[in-house]
Image (cartoon, rainbow, N blue to C red; front, side, top):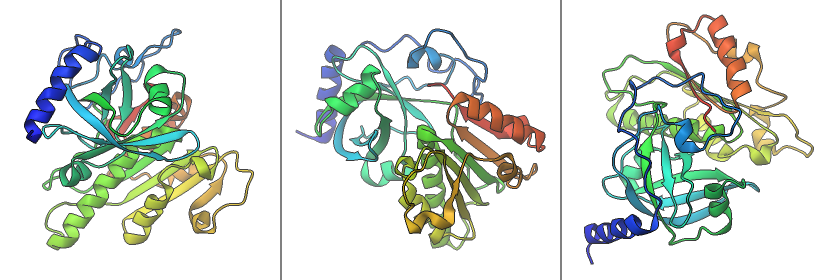
Amino acid sequence: MTIPSVWSSAARRFSLLCPAPAPFGCRLRDPGIVDRHMSSKRKMDHLERTANNYRQCALYPAQVCGIINESETVKRLRIAAHPDFRFKAGQWVDFFIPGVEKVGGFSMCSSPGLLQREGIIELAVKYSKHPPAHWVHTLCAVGSQVAMRVGGDFFFDPSPSDPAVDVLLVAGGVGINPLYSILLHTTDLMHLNRSSGGRDYNIGSVHLSYSAKNTQELLFKGSIVEACREFPDKFSCDFHVTQQSTDVDPSLTPFLSRGRITEEELRARVDPQKTLCFLCGPPPMIEQHSKTLLDSGLPKDKILFEKWW
């Protein structure tokens, strides 16, 4: 059986096994605008929270091809994607699971480059009782079949002709996922520039401020540090831990602070003419840091965030 016929067969199976996609239009609002005021006393599900976000029309079958324990509470799925599947760094997927009524919403934590090179995307999913996340942690196995549809107005997708920007990434907990995708995308662009002698993209600096309870919950920390060491003139990061009770790995010490991300740290990273900031984490954190950035002179349209979980 050829690869196209494999995916065609999988798509037919999903029409029987998956819950029907919600009847959203392909685009319900202008691109690049994130709803900053959505709230409800009732906890909304993913499709409700993202009803005003862009999402693609196509629903693609996919298959889990690897599972990694990223931390004690987070599993990272490697998923073989359909050949027509595409996304931009920072976007998420509607995640359909056969036999599970609720539709999951998970941000990609891999780069578009990995998809181009290997046909793989990655999702890092924190344990919870929510049915899609619970399935990932209790029933998902290599070979499990799912379906995915890309959505989201929160992404970094520069063109070679765009002027350089300094990217500031601010993450709290598993909010690192879309920001890590953006970071990996910028490293891919750096490698392109290195091979072309700097003729492909105008790349400014990239700084990550990332807060978690402890170093064990700092996801992807090894490869983040590796990027900082490979491109020391372009990449930098500050890790923050708020409840660390054990000794810290010496390799992380130069990048680590105890306590939350401070206003002073963010203000020092803001250039109103050049900075583009992406924030993802708990809503109170985003609201606090957005105010700090606005007070530092960063224009509102240069402060992009997601807080829909």
